[in-house]
Image: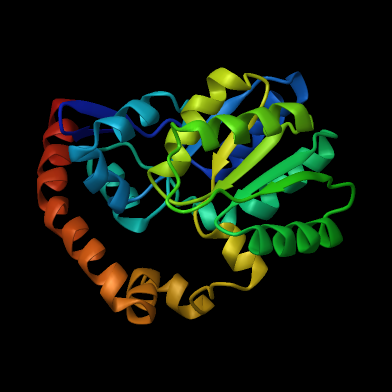
Length: 251
């Protein structure tokens, strides 16, 4: 399923979590890098006007649906996919990495969150090795000297998988650059996944997630920050829905 974003297009490339983990397992086994993006409506909205973000997405070979509206649009367009939340992928990705004897790096919003998450993941997943935990300063320029230094540290660490949790579009821009700088490393942008494991953010209750209302739960916790974001996202959905229907009719 492709989405029109400004002057370009982006496409979902992996339909479900089982396929994703199988592909990542093969890449880690073979020492081949990748860049994983988890598309949501906020990404679609940003991609419309942010050229750097569009270029970064073009450098990602693995793109999944992280958000029920993306799943609904794909189904409407006749190309159904399953929901693959980035924040739920952290433990699964680390389990695959441990199984392939590949170590992990975590680049998080704060070093404290990264270290707490690393300790909890290593306690939970047999054989997992987290060899680098880092956090850039604020504001962070993913194309600046600090990013260059982070990628040098990553290359020297020997990690096979790098979990990026510094927010969109910074994490995706860094991942696209990392693919060129560290071609044998897999980059996965996991958003708030590290903070959830570290206990710095709280997931919606299971019943709320089952009802597909996690967005409302998150908005209620941070209305000033997330309310405008969700409103902007809602405004672009009708246009994407019409294009999805048109795509389905042409098939």
